[in-house]
Image (cartoon, rainbow, N blue to C red; front, top):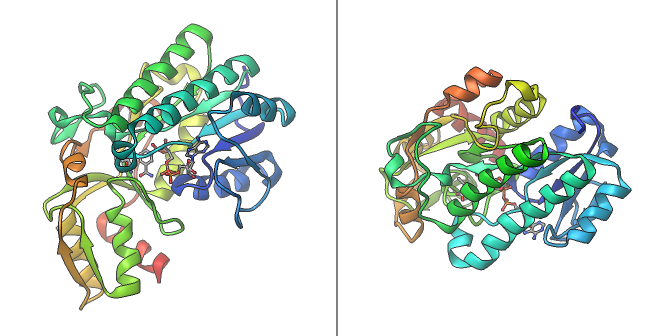
Length: 312
Ligand code: NAD
Ligand code: AKB
């Protein structure tokens, strides 16, 4: 079993919101050619090394791991919450079938695995604050795949020694890639659209409050967890709560308008409201703090300043 994250790294779903930032950070830390980015979409202008890979294609996955001597896999290939409600079959196949392929191949080739979970594992009974040990009663198909994914990772660790780890990311905020297919996307879309049009219509009510995190913090948390010694991790290793910040849509809008007077905000909830209402408003992340030293670094004002500068 490889225990150093410095060996060759494979990233699946690398063209997505997290992959675009995580791959460049991993390449800064471990070297450009040590990180093989892959996705089911075309490479476009994504920097090499890049390979086409569908996580449902077990043979190609195994060939790449073997050919490139991969020792660590960051499995980011997934279908997010809003897209998942529209295509539940695809969501289950990619999020669970893809993860199983990654875990099976990792068992065979001795790879370490990071595969993200989400605040979507929680259901309405976890509101307002989801604790690490709160019951997991998700009401979306995406949340169900994330809950089952955590269970699968724990089973592969306990039964086969696959060194698999995960974080229940909050909604992630980044300015390099605008997210699509999720429920928390509004907290990034707003910055993109006010820049282009001077106005934004939130697809959630103004009192909608969800846990969020800046991408910089999310990537730092990811690398901290992957570098933590295995013996220090508890039964939460497949899905740690990590807290970044929490704000309502109107608190976000008010902070943006304070920095950019004249911008217009409206609220016209659509079917993503129901998903947002099923998730917690905030998180308790005591185990991540105690077991591997997690601390977030952003508040609402700092986040808004960085996002406005990023989209300028
Ligand atoms: P994303 O939708 O931006 O990117 C996912 C990528 O996976 C896309 O590039 C897509 O082309 C690729 N993909 C889809 N099907 C594939 C397949 N069959 N084979 C290979 N690639 C495939 O998602 P993201 O925001 O980057 O999320 C990455 C992971 O983090 C997911 O597991 C997601 O559930 C989790 N997560 C994200 C957030 C967030 O706010 N971004 C929050 C919580 C958890
Ligand atoms: C989504 O909204 O689906 C994601 C998530 C919180 O998992 N951003």
